[in-house]
Length: 438
Image (cartoon, rainbow, N blue to C red; front, side):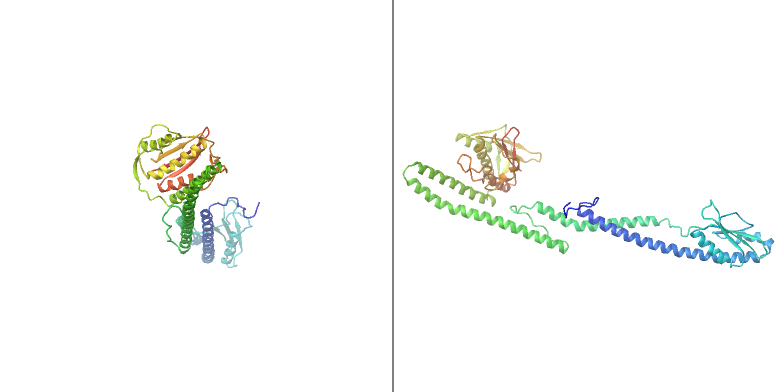
């Protein structure tokens, strides 16, 4: 596997999840550790207190029983018993002598309590949990059994698990909030980068928030302005060149017209016509990118589309309208006419005929589509076809060659009327070019 592509199994892909995991795991472990230390410390001190009180209480009880006359002992046995041990007169139950852990600690304390004065044997009672019995013989030879049932050192408070759960929930919430604060500017920035279209004048991103975020946003806004400026500059250069070429071309055409009629003159005049068309398209492209200063107005779609079709039919071109067109639209009519004529010119150039259809989208947008049965465009080139000066075939011949600006102009104009342009191949061959606007 190549370096830089290692991916830990189960490790989440999103930065949000990773940060959340690291932060939460770190906090939870740290919190768990401090909780455990506190618990262990409390346990140890409670155990020490318990063993200490057991020893001193037992020492007192044994001393008192030993001093009492034998006949009074039975009355005092219960009074001298405590919560964790009982005194029983007699030999008690048989047990086993091997003890471990807490049993051994308690046995040691009983021995300390008996003060080494009395013979003593401590045994654990099998089958009865942690129960121990100490068998000792008092001064007058009477047997005494101490029955010890060690209680839990530290009963847990019932509310403690709830507090623990509440603290964990608080940790979760704080971690989530911190991660959200850290990641949100990134999401906003990536959304702005995806939506970036320097040719449209959108509002810049707000430069508020923490200093690092504000810095990144300022850099992004500056980059956007620079790109817009470069685009503007490029278009101005194109406009200037196209404009400056018009005068010498006109002079050349005048000279060519004055020359004698020869086949060469014909070729020269048609070449000049081609150059003139290129220059005009260049100027039109530059103008369209600045948005035509045209006002919006209401148009009747039926008469608008029919008039475009009739103009073509008058010059003998096969352009027809499909179905019944109805409704009105509020748009810039000259810009829309230019978009549609560019589509139709393309269709006629490559297919010899064009059909226009008008419909509405689910969102209420007007969709005007120009359809042809020409060769279409390879699917991987559909996006490139919208780029200025793009041509699928490289020929410069007069029949199919062109400036490669028609669709780019259509796209620029569509932006000025608040619409969009889309190309797609038709089922059964041919191309459909549609413009959609509100």
